[in-house]
Image 1 (tube, helix red, strand yellow):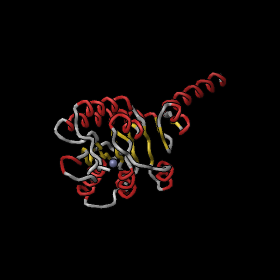
Image 2: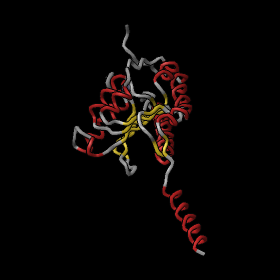
Image 3: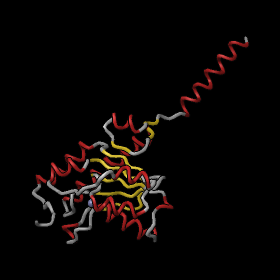
Image 4: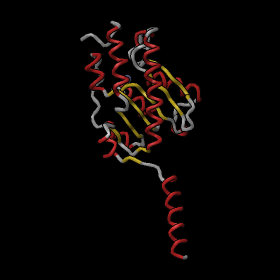
Length: 208
Ligand SMILES: [Zn+2]
């Protein structure tokens, strides 16, 4: 009887453990899944990132029809509230600095009334890997986590934009406590970038 009771207890505890323990992917496992990362990620976090990045791609496609560049960034808090969502407005505003990430950081900081977003534990979701300028802007912003979809190399290949040089930026971000996950659902993002090119929109860059 004691044995049956012990077995029953083990089964219950085992069941509870499997409900409580969530799948967490380490960097190596994420790399095997095709994801670029400088930290581990839970299954929930991964599913969540896919859902948000799908919406980011939709917003990118929607806004580029009205003159925005083919990039969109959303700043979101840990409860899922959107603090800011902005498109690239380089052509619209005649400013080479107005990339989606810069515009979203500016809007979030203005809304929260601070130049330091760190106490808010915010994440940014972008349809493409941040360029050299945006890597810098993100580093000074206080954003804690970066999720991006299409990698810079692919952006350059599809569009002809120059994304700049960013030696070991994931490692440098990790040193500063900033988590990065990239190459999440890149195919959806690539299609939007291709659409921008097919529409004959401006590939803005300085003349050399
Ligand atoms: Zn940029």
